[in-house]
Length: 401
Image 1 (cartoon, rainbow, N blue to C red):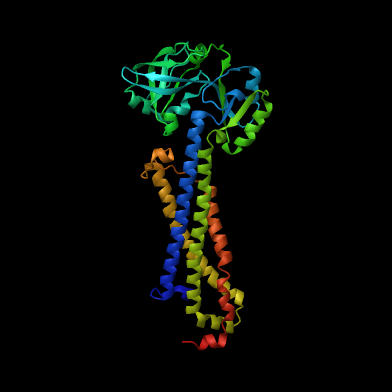
Image 2 (image 1 turned 180 degrees about the horizontal axis):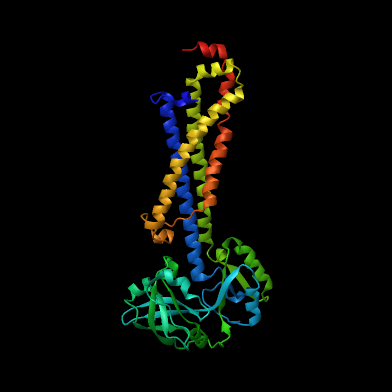
């Protein structure tokens, strides 16, 4: 069927090129949108999880507070509840205390997150600007990790000493003052975190609050599979004592997670629009080819070809055009993915998107799904416009010039 598109100067040749280009643009746009969408979702989920845990286990009295008001008595029984939950990867105790970080000339309100040696500091390494995490293995540590935002506001750097003022639990009591050394500086990209969060030894919060060594503010629990977060949270909640609650991070930051959930809807809209645009161009190209080859269709009918057989010939030709479009579209889409992954040439506003570089993520299964969907839908819907072949009369077609 070389004659279907043999003439490079025919109308159909130009239409075919336009259709191929439309399919290429469509599949490239879908792959780019999908990779950026999934990349942003993954990056935001990772960041919020690393700095807050996927599930917060705390007393009901502490639910509405950002600080630890009342302690949980840490017992082996509670730890077993986490360990016996299959999707839990790790957990650690925390205690949160509000305070004021002060240098010689200025001060800033802070949220002191006390952790102990159970804390996996390696998870924060990718966010370090300089320095290291406080050493929590040798007694009560007097080191803190602060954000770059606080570092710039108070002109503090690694090795500098600074005072933190904590409010005592006693009414009208004088604040407790602790002198710390800055051991490291991090940058999360989340304004809410970078504006006030600092890390230090949980022992300071326990002493100021007059808690025992086995009393903590909460547990931050991390899951292996984020897609199973709700089920894991429900399992943990069902196993905890009645006075203790478990809160998934999706409920602690509902606006963020509702926002990133919209990414999937946006990708779906782009997918539908691009497939429709591609199909309209493909259908137009096939109709033009059929009209140009009316005489050939009449000849085929005259020598005994069935309508469906002729339609299959033109449909095959259409799928070849579609295949070319998909091939070049995949090169562009995956080329963007590789370049952005390795060089990060597209920047984003961290204040809006919580990341400086546009993250990308796409799986082989997603690539196959998008291409397969494009092919299947096209093969099904392009069969419809080819019904025009049924109306072609062999004798009339062979007499056309």
